Amino acid sequence: MTDSISHFSQVPWCAALINDPAWIPTQTTSRVPKPTSEDSFFAETLGTNRTIRQCLTLRPSQAESDEPKYREVRTLMDLGSGLNGHPNICHGGFVATMLDEVFGVLITLNLGKKMERLKMQGSRSQLTCFTAYLNTNYKKPVSTPGVILCTAKFIRQDRNKIYANGTIEDGNGTVYSTGEAMFIETQSNGAHL
Image 1 (cartoon, rainbow, N blue to C red):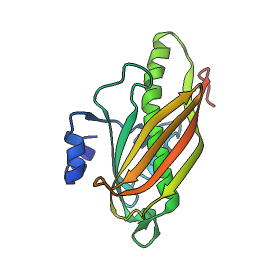
Image 2 (spheres, rainbow, N blue to C red):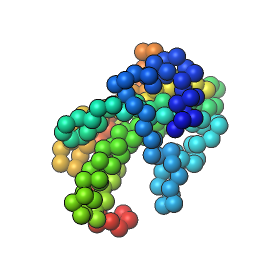
Image 3 (cartoon, helix red, strand yellow):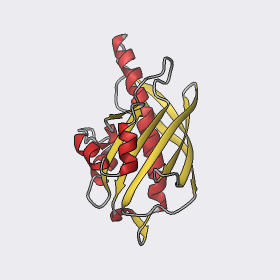
């Protein structure tokens, strides 16, 4: 994470986000290779100098008093030209993938807190979420290579349905894409789904 902080601190608008006391850098867990092959798409396939060259997530420095503990995350990504659909323009399908991923970062951060509480209660249950739908609105092309800001915000949870919305932007006010999604939270007895 130190390398990513150093990398993004070279970009003025990123440095302002990193240095904002309301936000704190946190592990982007989907960028960590796992023996189960979970997250291998983001951790390995997209973890190259031609795809997502660096990635850094910021969460609020203060957790909420009720659930979910974190209502928003911001993820910085340095995109390479290996993500192009057109010359110097990111593939539209990958733009939707970035939105899906940042929603997952927000949900995973909150599921981690729930899992800690379940373990403290002696439960062996596992929680996970799956994308039920993702609506993506394309406003402007995302230029590559370049640094972008992905945001995800919790909207509400109805039983096991989690609703979120988010954006992909340049950090200076230009919004490239917006999205809204619903995820289904599942609980298992600890066995793989």
